[in-house]
Each structure stands twice: as structure tokens, then as C-alpha cells.
Length: 157
Image 1 (cartoon, rainbow, N blue to C red):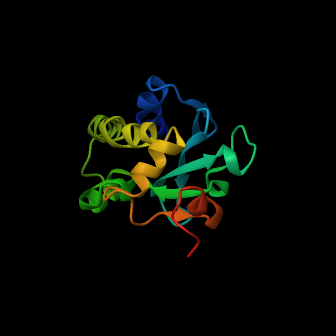
Image 2 (cartoon, rainbow, N blue to C red):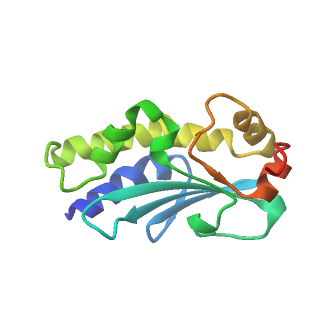
Image 3 (cartoon, rainbow, N blue to C red):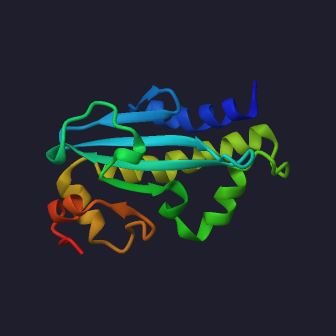
């Protein structure tokens, strides 16, 4: 099994258990008000990967499987827990041989299960998303379209 497939499986397994559906290198969970997207992206410069997290707000447009880069709210998974950023980067760097395949897979799966899935579950409704957005745990390095900020009651700065 290729190392990139190990990453896909490690990310995909906990997402699948949470009800996400996979399409290519993205996983989707549609709710009444939002669509959560998790995307695995390969760096153009080496064997590094990124995990992108997106939220599509249904009040702002129709979509079934929006590309992560089209989502109204976007961030990288490492911004969900900032004190672990460098460690998470190392997990997704296949040139970093300090992890065995099994160890890398287990650690990635654990992070997705314990951090990514709960974050996206809180974002399943506009009410939950608004509450999370106004809290201190909101990812600081997130991109939010102006219409999304207005919908969340945060104004359009």
C-alpha cells in the first residue's frame, strides 16, 4: 500500500464512521444547513500533504459536493489545535521517516476522530456554527467569505 493511500485511509476511516461520504480525495457530510468538507491536498513541492476543512452554508447557495476551495468557510486542520501545528505538519510529511506507517496512520486517525469530527459536528447547524464562531476555540487562521460572516452575525469587515 502506498504511503499516500495510508494517509487517505487514516483520514477516511474516522470520517466514514461519522457518516461522511468520500469522493476522490474529499469527504462530505451534508446536514440541513451546512455541508462539511474534508480534503486531502498534496503539495506541489514534495511529499507533504495538507488537510483542508471547509464549510458550505446552504443559505448562501446550492451544492451537493462543493470543492473545499469553493466553501464559504475554510481552514487547515492544523489550525483546529494550534499548539500541535508542527507535529501535525510532520505527520503529513511523507519525507519525515520518524514515524512508522502504522504509527502515522494511528496518530492521524486519532486526531481526525478527536478534533476534526467534533469540530465539524458542532458546525452542522447555523446555530452551532454561530456559537462556535463567537467562541475562543474558533480557528484563528480561517478564511470566511463576507456573506458567511454576515450570516453568522459577525458583520462584513
